[in-house]
Image (cartoon, rainbow, N blue to C red):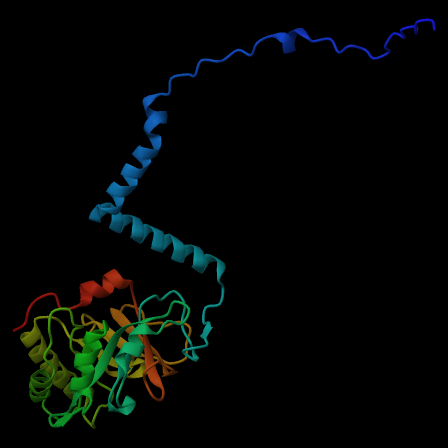
Length: 300
C-alpha cells in the first residue's frame, strides 16, 4: 500500500509580536511625599482638635445652624404654617418656643411637655402663674415650679397685678411665694386692667411693683400685657423693660421701638401632657440670647 501523501496544514501560525515577546518592565514606585503619606492622619487630627476646642466647636455649630436656618427661610414661603400636633399656626423665623400655664391647666405631666416635638418646635421655657393681688396663690404653682425644672424646662413665674392694690405689697407677696434661682427667667408682672385709675396713677403703682421686685432679684422684671393695653397705657413709660406681649393669630408682631422678648401668639395650642388648650409663645432671639436673659447670679 503506497504511503499516504502528507497534506500541508492550512492554519496560519500566529506570529508572536515583538511587544508581546518583551518582558514586562516594572516601574519603580515614586516615593510619596510627606503630605500624601500622612494626609488622612492630618485631616483626622484637625477634625479632632476642632471638635474638642470649645471656641471653634461653638463657632462652627452656630455658623452651621444659622446657615441652615437662612437656607430654610429662603426656600419656604409660608409665613404662618400650621403644625398638626400643636393644632395651631406658628409664625416663622422663630426658633425658641414656650408656654405659660396656671391652675386652668390643672396637673401637668412635665416629662411629656419636655419630650414633645412637632417638626422642630419644642417647648424650651414655661411661665407659670404664682400669685394675684395680695392674697391669692395659684394652687398648682409650687408643683409646676418644681417639676418644670426637673424636666429641663426653663422656668419663669408671673404675678397678676391688681391696679387698686399697693404695688409694693403685691411685689413682696409675689417674692415670698416664688423663690427665684440662678438660671430662672426674670420675674414677670402681668398687667391687663386699669382698675378705674388714671393712666398716671396706674403707671405709678406699676413702677412701685417693678422697683421692689428689681431691688430683690437685681434684674429688671419682664412686663406682660396685651398689644392694645401696652399701646394705650404703658408705651413710652416702661420702654427699657423687657416686654412680653399678647397678640393672637397674626403672622407678624409689629411693635416698633420696643424691647419685646416674648410674643404670646395663640391661646389654642395642644401640648403633650396638658389637658385643654394652652398659650403658646415665641422668644425673639436664639437659645444663646435666651440664656443671656436668665438670672445670672445667686440670690440667697
